[in-house]
Length: 462
Ligand SMILES: Cc1cc2nc3c(=O)[nH]c(=O)nc-3n(C[C@H](O)[C@H](O)[C@H](O)COP(=O)(O)OP(=O)(O)OC[C@H]3O[C@@H](n4cnc5c(N)ncnc54)[C@H](O)[C@@H]3O)c2cc1C
Image (cartoon, rainbow, N blue to C red; front, side, top):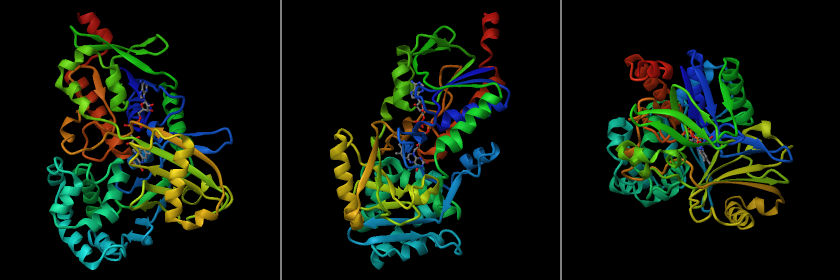
């Protein structure tokens, strides 16, 4: 069977690598010149690596870790202690450290108990308020989707301070939205995993660039098994045979059409919507995609002439737009530049910032950064890089979850993969991996049930 996949991000790669191993002929099309989607990395003219985003991997990422282990890429990460370090103007650096020798959920609760920005009363209220998700299950968490996290938090008596000092930051880090904009389901899903599994909050960063360590090795493997990965090949249209309810080809920007038996979109939802045939609007399945909108976010790297933060882990900030950041020269020493900091920031919320010119944006980020790390005032900024992503992960706003599509579409040989499609995890690399596994399952089920068959057989039968 010949499978055409559009979008070489994590989801597209997992579909392609899995199907090529099962003996299918695979063509993976990617519009950009670099693979990896929102987890891509490339070198600038100076040879410095630019990343589309600061990417953290968690012990909870079982599907992704299994996938990488299976294909000999498991030794890709620098693992860090399970600790959320918050930087704020008021409290300096303060951490929530999961205590390794305590069982779940006491390991996390003990970490919160030592978190100095919260009062004893805040901690007790938080402990009590979180009992339900801690001892609950995914079904309970799913039912909270119609409410914002902030409203859920306050309704459960946990108070404003823990919202401001911890949960706004967590919401921004998870979905680039503040806690009053994000569905309660999102932070609660993360907490559910952290509360149920000891290894879940362990964090890791790729040893150097994801391009060198993950995507290029996967391309070599796919091509070694007869598949093709075509970078710089943008899908601009979908050819559809309405009578047979089948896709008959993917049209590319260069005017060519790529044909196969099965077609997969592993593109982000806003890109998929641009290429949907107009007649597909009659399917509520496709029409509902309009409810899934991408969140704007900015990735900025600041190269300094000296070391600044001195922390070998991620940093979260409360009360700024620097939701998550890290010194890449410390957390991934493979990027090292002789003791000089390369600070990489996830800047969110970015709605009003994303259109600012570079110099204003750098000034804005520097202002917030020196408030958190006054020592940066003395340092010289050698260089900056900025990646603006107007439509990143889908905005998990209250009530939106029900519109996420299954991986099997109403069109018989057309399937979806991608973090926004229906899967129980967050919009993340793990979520993209789960969606891709479900996509492969749906294709396999359809093949087994005879719903799809190689195109040549269908033509002969007709
Ligand atoms: C700044 C930032 C930080 C993040 N941090 C984390 C993190 O720490 N941990 C985590 O787990 N997740 C993180 N994420 C989320 C994670 O990157 C995404 O969830 C994941 O990349 C989704 O994978 P995907 O394959 O579904 O989509 P994508 O990664 O978006 O890949 C889709 C691919 O489709 C391609 N495409 C689009 N249109 C076309 C077309 N017309 N033709 C062909 N190809 C096309 C795109 O170029 C892209 O390569 C972060 C995201 C951002 C933006």
